[in-house]
Image 1 (cartoon, rainbow, N blue to C red):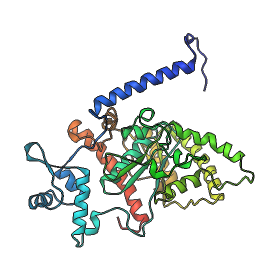
Image 2: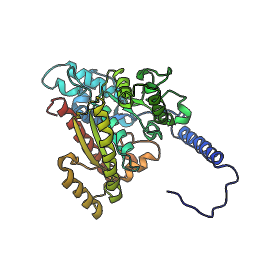
Image 3: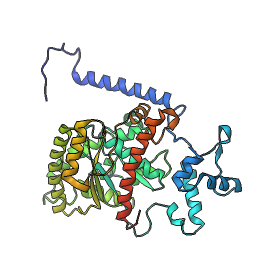
Image 4: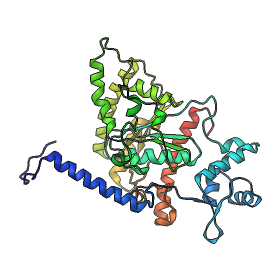
Length: 385
């Protein structure tokens, strides 16, 4: 859409003005990050109380206390008032310790994929801005890490919103060939995916960051096709991504979550998205791609249950798609947006930083959504959940 106005002409060419604005904004964001996460400007994950750690593991707080007293498992840090505090790495070490003890419950402590279980790759998608893709993806990845799954988050957004939540400022922290593009590009500078995977401050959660270089693939693919005399499509995007992920012992995407904000314009946009996606997947299938997803689900996001029109649209979606709409919606919450002001997620900040009722409501919503997706994952592995 283009608008013509009588705004005074810019004093310099638009590209230079925009570049100057970008540089100014980047510098301010870097300064903000330095203030939020001094002295090294690197994010860290808070420690967990013994009660929180026990809940994550699936044991009682009293049992953790006995382990600590007897010197079994990792030694917790003792905080103010004698409170025992655990890092996520401590929690995972406790899971390993308890699983090694054997017994009927030993398998429940290690939820990660076992031999014979295919890797689950979940794509969170929708081309409509504001549908909650970044919030959903980041919280889901962190939820899986907190539950003890080994998780890799891949940011395919050139704007790198998820990477920013993990503490990266792409124009400052990434110098080139640092995204998935580096592993799927067509020239001799292609690198193995393992070269662009970065550790995060969540134990067990790694990241392939995103930035503007991801757009390069859209420009180079037509050029690459034009140079192919046989016109074959066996080296296009989906096969290159599949091969890149396979180089890290993973496989192609197995499941899809489509996020949708329950507003009529968003639903209309999703209709176009589904048509476009159907056409794209038909090309992928005809070229030999495997499209047997374990599950395809629609997730209602930024939901306000007291909003009448939203409730009607949510009901409309459930009527149309039945059980392909997740039972639990992602509630809109000031707690999530407030956490985002400091580039954090709700899983990173403590309950004491918010109105308790607001925090609990948002946390319960996130956990309900993510647990429902986890149940689908476990079902795909043949587990009871």
